[in-house]
Length: 130
Image (cartoon, rainbow, N blue to C red; front, side, top):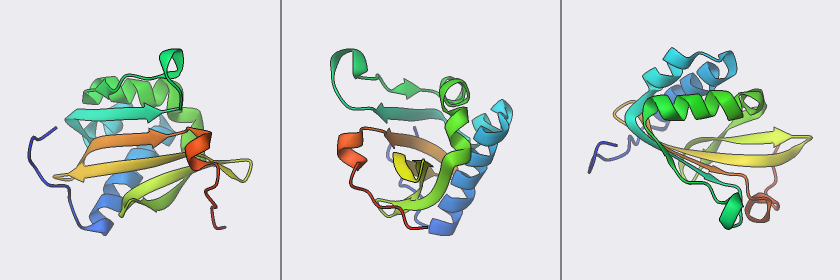
């Protein structure tokens, strides 16, 4: 990640980058995915719990792209654009209910951080408008 660089504040630019990430994820396009990721991107996954359910962050554009395509590609078509903590993000909806919330930090036109929360205790009360 680019040290002390500040996140992009333009919501439309954030949305453009996040939409490109989602499109590459849906299409299984490794090169396009790497192109929208900062070389030192950090991907954090919160599925709840500790011990064997805990996940270590994945660091690096190629490593994150592999993780997204290997494990997340089936969920990419279920992602809906959302504003998460004031920034462009996505809500993954399965069976009409939120399955995961994804927050992105965009710096310099690339994704520097991805925070995916799939802990149902944390997002179980979330209501998604049609």
